[in-house]
Length: 115
Image (cartoon, rainbow, N blue to C red; front, side, top):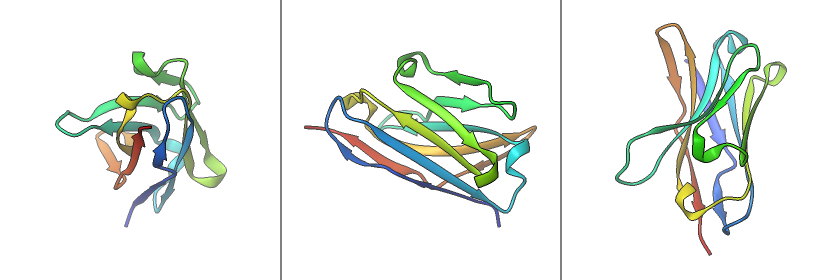
């Protein structure tokens, strides 16, 4: 079945960086818009960043200038480079694929920003 597998999460100090990866399989990756969402304890899931099939990107305001989303269609992979991390970035980060009414989700990867 369709799989989205995230990796790259972990514990990082404030001001540090992490790079998340999401490898997709068993669907036609290049025709799907890809996105990263996150969910902190007690909070709703929120959009972090998305990238269209053509490579256009969009970011939540609090992530602009710190996070960069990119995709490699040859590797069926979407990335999220996160710089200048803050404690409030602590959350489970989820990969999402969307096309028309079809959506797929990964299982999530934990990012913890703490000293």
